[in-house]
Image (cartoon, rainbow, N blue to C red; front, side):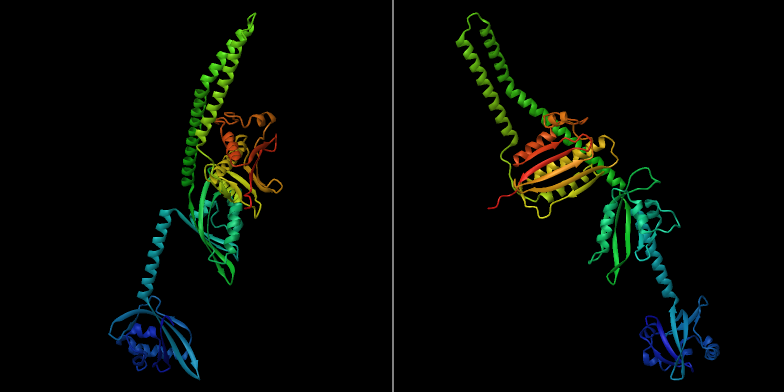
Amino acid sequence: MADATLLVDAHGHVVLANESAEQLLGYTADELTELSVEALMPKIYREHHSFLRSDFSKRPEKREMGKGQNLVLLTKNGNEMPVDISLSPINSNNENYILVTFHTINRLLEVESSLKVSEERLRLAKASAGLGVFDLDLLLDSAQCDTLVQKLFGFQRNTPISHQDFIHAIDIIDRPKWEAMFAQATASLDDGDYQIEFRINNNQNKFVTWLYVAGRVLFSEGQAVRMLGVVQDVTKEKLLQQRLNEQRIELETLSTTQIAIQTASAIAHEINQPLAAISAYSEVALFALKAEKPDIDRLNRSLLGCVAQAHRAGKSLHELMEFLQKGKVELAPTDLNEVVLEALHITQHNGYGGFKSKLDLEPELPKVLANRTQLQKVLVNLLRNGVEAAQNIGVPIAEIQVLVRTHAELKMAEVIIQDNGPGLTEDVKERIFEPFFTTKEHGVGMGLVISRSLIEANGGQLWFDVNKSDGATVHLTLPFVRDG
């Protein structure tokens, strides 16, 4: 037994003592068995105690002694120690014994004090870190939550809380994330650790609240029985991240605009002189044709000049494009499914997180031959366009469907991305890949031009379907890696 315990016979002699009693009293076991129980108390109490012991033998029953009455125990070195005592009658072989258990008050006070200090430290740490705590009993489907968790989730005080209450408090967009996490954590064969971020649908708060939850699921005999977790409000961090992402996107747009302006300026500079020359030669040719007797030689020189200047303009543009592209595109075997997942993750965490995605990936898809960075850039651009198209017409939740499939006969993989925005008209479809054409209020009109150029440089194609009411559908293809 952990507590100091003595076995005393009906005459008050110590029969047995455990190790805790030896340590507490300072005696050896042999020394204790030579003592009467009265020897372990101050002299002024011994005579009175013999009467109490006699009374107990007449009415043996389990009882507590002390409980605030300041009973005192005498150790071997003469020190007095305040204790509470528990008495339990025992009968063995028709002999009556008393099991005496000592509870040292000082030790209890130390434990209680230490516990209070630990609780206070935990409370201060929770308050400082803004942490809430919950304990969900999975067998009873009942949760205990502290005040902060109740406030964050919108739970009413003194109201029973179930697992469904947690789910209903989560924004409908993020509920599948919680359910997937819960299924994985409660089915875990390891330690059941989990962590997740989601938005709260708290009617008491008009603003979006982001929560971070981490914890562990406890198991008993292979069954999940409890779910413990700490909750932290990370809304400020999320809003800061969103602002930074928006600023980054604005900088990217500004950079793209400047690149477009510089490119257009370079193109204008390179072809301005040839165009001016073509114009001059054309005027000479027209003048020659209007004469009563056309000067054939002059007309011939003018037309030859037009041809030469047109070739010059074409050559200048070709050289300029080679300079801008800066060399050959490096292609390598690439896992298309993996790049699609990466692009979705990047889009979700870079200012476009308010959309619902539906994935239909093809398992065991052969690798495609592509430049991973360029492919990822194209996919992110197409996903962002889809989200923006839905948001611009006030759709409550932007939905993006991504399908990956195989064209075996073409030896190509195809990615199909469909949004729930306004769709494309035939007129818009005809101009969608024109440089500087855009349907966005602040668009540059180069994103799709660059995207198609990159896909074609990777050996594929990029095109749109016309959907006037079911959202826009964009397709891109890429070649599989050839065997050998």
